[in-house]
Image (tube, rainbow, N blue to C red):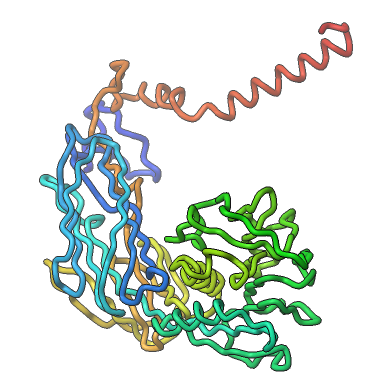
Length: 440
């Protein structure tokens, strides 16, 4: 807004020089009591070993300047049908996380809609994303014919029947493997050279090789229970560790990057980790020699979780959308892009040309190029959702719109560097007093 400079009103300093006789006046148009709830985080994944089942984590938040607590609704649509209405209560400044169990077919559209009375920003109220495409994991099970564990074969066959696994069975004579394998399982056998280009599951290791340091026990040691070190690890998802009884057949070293998951006595019997970018799972027990483990539903779950965890780094097992916040620029390939956005509850599509190998995410929604590359753009920002209220005065009573407010604001900012400077000065003074005057 331009005004006559001769009125004597001092305006906020302009970043650029203004013409003679022209001044710039800044007007604060922020709301006095804004209310804004929004979706600030979202992540979805398929449930291991359960076809058509998905889990989504959603975080919602309310801005700190909201005048009072609010109650809203989070509507979850799958394939255009309202599936899970959820009621949410939020305090000002509060963030709340939710885990949603979803059921649907691949490529069905998931839509989340947050509704709160008086909400002043609609851009952070919706998220749309297709249920991810998942292809079966291609695994190779290598075991000597004379000592192949029948319970391991039974567990792998059960996973294969669920459509989550394509299994390639082989013996040491079939090594090395053909191309197209996602994960290899060594059961009671190891090759002469460690494979560095594949995730590996080692069951009942006969000895050390490559990054694993193990020693086989001729006489297995039975244990009635195991101690869980990290129950939240994906490999132990839905595994009833408290009921496991097994026979330890190997001891191995976990001093490197392997994380212990089960302990039998004081020795680890299950560990997982990533060494040099390669995912490895170590199982120092024999299913056929164990008392309860092979007869439990937890054993196929353990094997299946291990396969899926190892295969997470394999290409195209689970489709990964190119997810980025709005305002970013992402590299793409193609001549045109099709956007899918939500308008009044309906999905609208429109196509735009691509003039460069870059796509500016200037709106929320899904996008797909004519080459098949897909991605999503969301706001998903706590800073954007936390809309501040307009305040003419600070708690000390200083007019924030006056010229004196600038000096006050400079004193109320981040003082980390000032404190560091004072601390360094004190240390130098202490050292000088100690060396020059023997002051302790």
